[in-house]
Image (tube, rainbow, N blue to C red; front, side):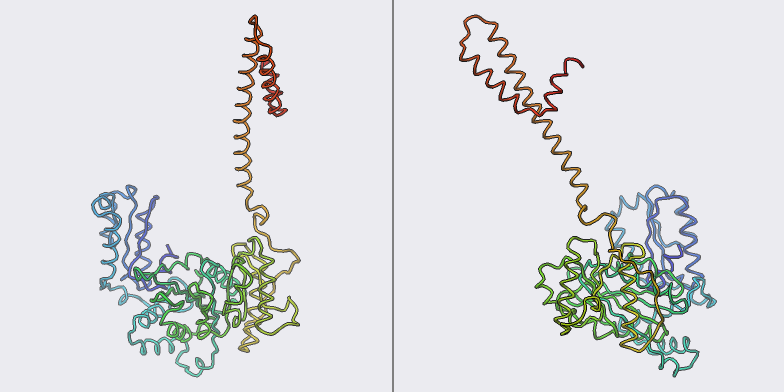
Length: 466
């Protein structure tokens, strides 16, 4: 419940929709409502449903407690799925005049270091094009205790992460956040994640948070944003969101773009250090010539390194990086290209990538977070299933299918053999049978006998003894 409430506050949402198909739903929804009220966010509406597991009297109890709407199976039959979705969206869009903000005592029940409510609200104002100058000034004063010169002197580093769709940008970001929070226990971090808007509907699936496991932390803040356009990888309010996070005095900001094509390098306008994330499956080596970010990225991450051909991809990308930066005499180990598996716990590649990131930040911005100590091994990262055996289940299934086919074929041959042997016995028992016919039958019997495998012959021979 705490993670859901924390997410809702950080994203500055109008409503929370939950499906609950297990017991304890009454306590679950009530606790969520209480936690929202304690955080001064009682204006966030709660919607739910659970099929037949939530009884009518429980639905009435939850409605009386302040839960906006619990849908029953009867509602589903009357409205249908689309009808319920439309009703939730329309209702959530209406302003909720809750007194929770006025009653809020200013305490932070989620133990967060920053006032994430205020930060989220200011970003929403900026994203919707409203004037937020007063709120920004108030946020800056609150985080600097009125010392504006201190805020001006603080150099907040922005890391820009971009790459192709499905390369694992969110997973890599999550691993970097985890290492930052664990290694620097006095530092704070903000993550601004952008997802593409669909041209057809205008909506966006802000799903990067699903991959994030380390952001539910008192020193971390995450905000999801939509591009609001179909031909860009960043939001129009990108700079405003960064400025707001800087005003909140975060120590480190990570900007994650939506999936980009080969020519996109727009993230460079917003960050101090840039990282490009790709996979080994980019096609022919000539495709690397077309990727703009290989010219500008400070770090290149080849994620999903357990894929076939990953080592070849690493060599090709390093070679391309040398050509792009005219580093023909540089050693391969000095090229900032790293193979990673973000899905693997404590991955050596991610450890090395984070270490390179800290060094690159210090090199480019003179900001020194500190050292990252991790155990270095000579082992090559391996996935749970080695790349050579990724088809092992297919091989087992194929072997079974081949065996089944062999059994069918041998059974058919044995049936033919049995028929010819019976015909030979019948013809030999008759007087005056043409010897030519008998010879042909014997030839057919010999032919089918030779078609049987040794195992099949043994089974047929021993069959009478069973």
